[in-house]
Image (cartoon, rainbow, N blue to C red):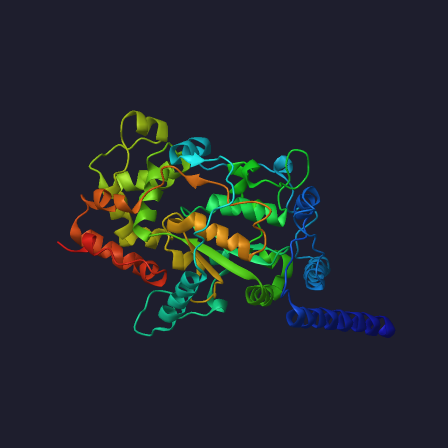
Length: 419
């Protein structure tokens, strides 16, 4: 009996030592150089081998995937074999009328050729990152959560950080900033979703919108506890240190207009029940509010943009639950003062920024960023949309989103904030 206990104790100690050794080794070796080596990239390379030289997987990539797999199996916290299977085995929950939303937004799904000259100069990219570092370090510029450390961020607030371990990429998605199609790109790169034939998608445009926004299609930081258990934060820090991290941002006020248009001017049952009903109940003079979006639209009862702004400014809104991700501040979604991003793109220069990023990631020869917009919400609309909003409300709204304006280099909209 004593020998049996000693043997069990020895096995446990050896196992713990192996785990710690592998983590330390992976931290030292890391994934400093990622080359495209998915089956997607291999097939593309095979189709045009004369134009593009093939690239073999690096030792670092193998180490990274082996460690993940080892920790998954040993700790039993990782994803099972079918964690990222296609929607054949899942019940997808759709939010809103996706096809109608895409039609209204005016996507241009035509195939794009290579962009001509005019790629955003790298100096501009450096200025954006420098601006972030400057104001994050500026003690006179303060905003909520600025001073907390990465370890202080709850897991639930890390669910916008999507990880592609195959290529060493982390993308923080911001709703209303072309996130649907960046998610499509991440799915293709990570091979996290299978098409009807049971093979990973190779063309971002072929991925259905409802699959793109299904949470099972992506590995996010919020899911790391399933893979690594108590080692989650350590693995997050390793990947943040060694992976390429990017996000795309947008003028905060224009983003609000876009969110209002897509979530309240279209028949979206989920958003109507969750947000339109409370808005109409609080800020309209109506005693009976329709319970369904169809009934509301038939009777012409929709929240106005003014009521939406009033809802954002109401202290009761945040007391009841955090802002929805479509109008939550970008700094609360992506934590730019706790995470040092390698690339900061802007929707206002989407085509140029996307081309530059894909080139820096060495995947520009495989595909181009999917669509451009024929009728996207423009900055020039701000004065029209805010013309009926009281000046005091506009000033309060700016204070609410000031950190996003300052951190990401958007000029203060003085024309909206003074008489």
